[in-house]
Image (tube, rainbow, N blue to C red; front, top):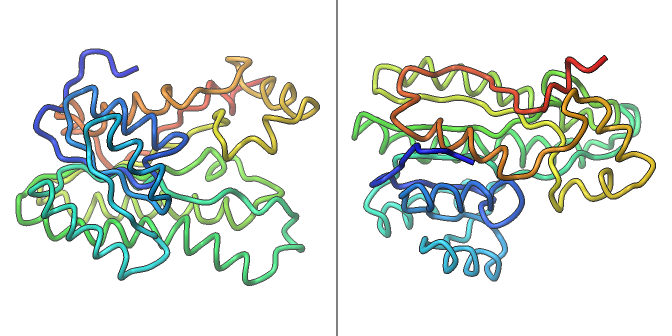
Length: 250
């Protein structure tokens, strides 16, 4: 959880904010005092989350520039501005070997998991520059540094987010905008059911971390609360692994 860090008065966008890690971030942001705009494609899930946390629901498809720009305009109108962007929306890995990925799948994964966050950043940057402050958090993956043999497009997209984070941080530092990437390891969500729901695969993956277990969404959300707060004003251009020591397991 986020401890005593507060986000009072902050207006936050969480893409993919009604499910999985995004839902945990939405809840913890609201609990810390932020006003949250939950972006996503599932209207029913969005409305339920917005009602639960006292936020607002904004339908948005991150694969569409027009949809992202419209969502940003709607959010600015409803909240009076945006202070925090969490680019979390994405799709799972393709689940096939490098030589089995077809071009249409490759394009879809890259468009959703890399170009989508870039669209969201681009839509929010004008407001950040005008108000001369902002927080950008890109939800990447441990796959960006560990590699995933059966998800080459996913790994490539999540690695690309690290470059996007650093470039954005460098470009916007003069406007008092911080940008960081968060790299979750295996987290128990709807998206990871195919792997973590498999009784043969699950224990093998757990043994790969020194924590000997998988994360819960709340354990990823906590670092995102910190990165959205004034406590992180001198923390930028970083890639923070939240993986239970996955890369250190022996």
